[in-house]
Length: 420
Image (cartoon, rainbow, N blue to C red; front, side, top):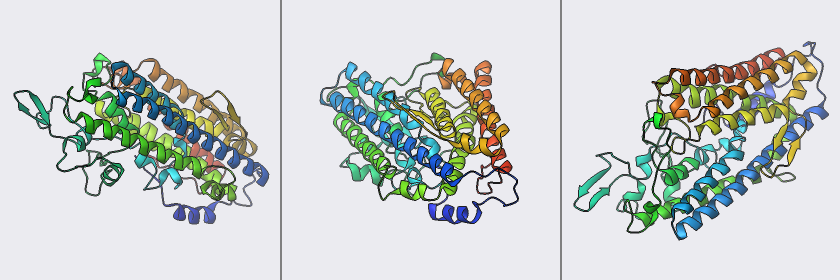
């Protein structure tokens, strides 16, 4: 879900008017050369992260195409494994959100890649929902979702999915989220795993049978389901390619604009990590589902991979702050990060930030060690609730310290909304 960002033009006006610190601040200056090196390294990390995400999505696409060509149980498992692997680099790029960059674009950004929660019945059938199908002597005829409404959606193609992704006037949930999501990682996830509607205490992810894609197998419209999966995967690959291009070096693109003024870039970096930590990670992805004990509100609810989403988001925050990123091939990008900027001006703030980051990573590791997330937030699991609550507390502390750093360094253009 996209939150807390302004159009880039508005942010640019704000940052140009506020990015200079008071001449009487008494803080040691950070040289232009050092600031330039920080934003260049950040851009290198982002480009590598999106490139890794794109390459992993290509592998996933290959596995999905192989499965659809001849559906088997093993082929479906291979496609699932590739989806899980594709999430690893992408989730580490989310700290680039919330400041009007390419990932915040309305026509190709996060809303097309990682929107959640989604209404399963908007895409495909719902297990056990009497409103989702009607019975006939040979079994259920499913009547929910784009896949199962050929009269309304005669063709499943790129235009169909684009036109029906979070349409104006679409369905919203109790939190005001538009849940009519037709594209992105979670649409693919649902089509691979199916609904996870077993009790959380069973610790079982979605169990969609591979025969949902075998003509004459389970769940009608198997050919349309396969077409949907193929089209939505291609859309994901294409949108990731656009992000790779936006951050590529030596091009007339967004990256060139970003590094042109390092003071603005550094402010964007602080806003990105702070807002991801506070409103999204501690708030929407942990705090909200914990507060209402809602299995359906977890981020990757079909695959039960939410524990990795949380940890990888924190790793992405850590990457930006420390200036380090380990690529999917094991190679490393290393250079100055926000830590270097803070250390020059107020070393004790940098020391505290590194301590808070480590504590938050340990708390999210505890969630992973005790997975799945939906079991931890279940109302019958008070000890699990405490594990998640500690994650909320420690990730919020990271965001709050970003705000403190901004105050101490007199960065008036860094603003982390105080909510989760």
